[in-house]
Length: 213
Ligand SMILES: [Zn+2]
Image 1: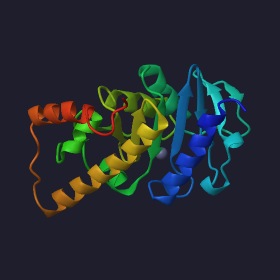
Image 2: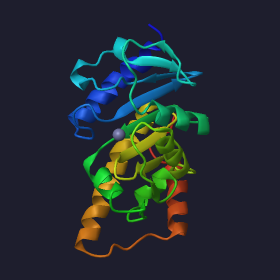
Image 3: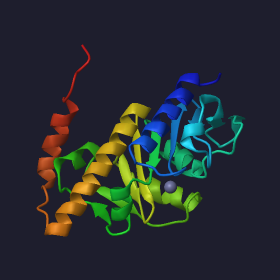
């Protein structure tokens, strides 16, 4: 099977996103790029029924290569991001509750916690556009400039990474960050971290964790 590993990883990720409540029903979509091919979750299928062979493979221009079902309606969003961000190897789009709530309220997720450094700085909320449109894809690409995550206005969240594990992890951190901001701003006016502190944290995060020898 073409891109077998990527298609299996997409199934695992979609089911994990569903199990942990980052998506409800058939919402959300996930893709992985390998060379000039993109594997993307199909449209409107319950994640419990998803299987690797049902994950479609398309070219970067959207042409189907091996896709038994219609692709996610947000295929233009995924392809637009890959076109603009050559370093990007995976895209995760969710309708996670805190991120979606905030996407209807704010213009950005400010530096309420140092985790915003993980995304390159305060996370932007892009202008609303109808789901599945090229306009939404363009708005998201703009909001993702110098960032690895953004919110889609009155819609949900997008995270990107060099691989699917990274993009998925970021979707969890972004949801947590949005939840913290909603709680803090519901209780008062949260203190925000200065840009210089975010730069220091970004440098620290770059060396954080288990480094490969
Ligand atoms: Zn969506």
